[in-house]
Image (cartoon, rainbow, N blue to C red; front, side):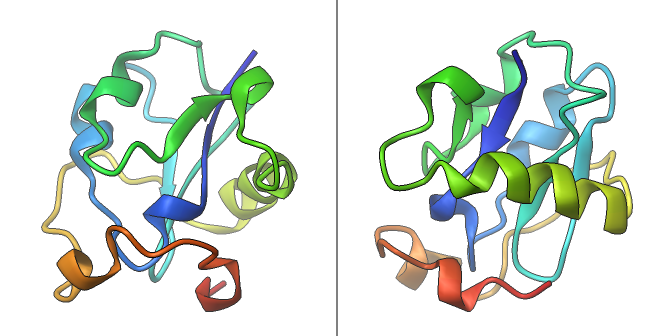
Length: 107
């Protein structure tokens, strides 16, 4: 089982999760983070660190967000690894509670 970054991360991109990941499985895109399922060791450390609760075990991804399982795997292959915490996106606060942001994902 791997962990998956879901819709809530889009346009926020908090990176608190990156700091606690022992295997550097996070990948950074323009406005979203993705977890490489082949690198994730299921340690669960990232889940508690996400301020918008965007990270779930692949078996627990909420209904309607199942596409993020394949999307994380796809984007992790394209995007560079991120290993240090950065500031969230400048307008993160206005997007934190917005739902259904998939059309806003920048690949």
